[in-house]
Length: 387
Image (cartoon, rainbow, N blue to C red; front, side, top):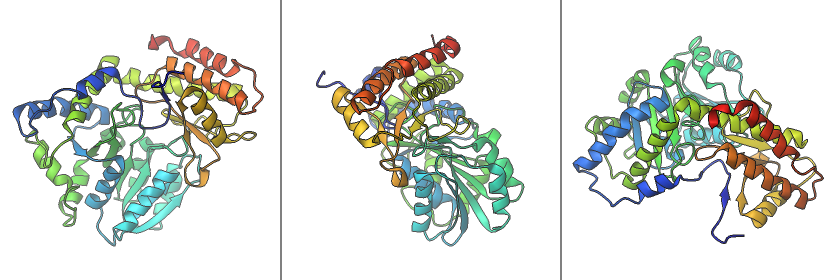
């Protein structure tokens, strides 16, 4: 084993492309100078395309969780009523953030491993006419579920004027996102997932409807006050010191996505999901989610006859291959494979090959190559545009 070699297949942070690493290594520039303004002018319209919005996307130096907090503190006031749809650990995080600000929370919890049903959310909302915002998670990282965000707003708007606020941290940039067409009011994502960057930037798209609510809110905080970012972004600057190295990297990451073509980026992620799922089905190892609810960016595997944590230790020791464990109530019960961002079908085939050896070394009786062969067949059937 090479001492400095590792294979990162967790759902964030994800591997960083060499060209992005080189971009981030550029000499520092003044954050109030013309060069930084030119950089922001270049980035702004390209972020809009990824989010599927005509509105500017705010760029904030911070983690994905700070983006979720920004959405809460800007769009909701203390004692307001909100609905949080919980399909896993990150939906539950929205609950904790809201409660920290004295917001009254109604929780609609779905069995972990399943997506929510927009019709059930609509019917549930009829009971709470004072709800001012509905919080949901696009990709629930902890369970490998992709929720039907594209159907949520239309269902909610039949019975409520509540804002639709979405955590898109672990999928925006890797899956189709159409904020405006879908009626999403606030969409949040982070840099360390499908955007192929280190952690440290968050991106927030805001609808015109949400801006009206935010502008009327007197308690938006200080650093996370989105009106400051909107005002300064109009002038191609930022209200506080930006993470310039990450902006250099973002410029290059967007260039890579544009060269591949966003539709091809999304197709690649779908293909990798199908390859991973086919492999585990061939090996007769259960998956946490069904095909309909499965995420394009992370797959959750739920072993029945071997220990998930011991398996993770085996593949890390054997190959320096890292996959994620379960969180919260799923801790020790599942492991999760990230396939997003700077990841290709070739990476998936390599990862599955290492996983098969790890399974055998963990005491699981499998036929070597059976999972890899199933993934290869998916690639041959559906991967024509990847070449």
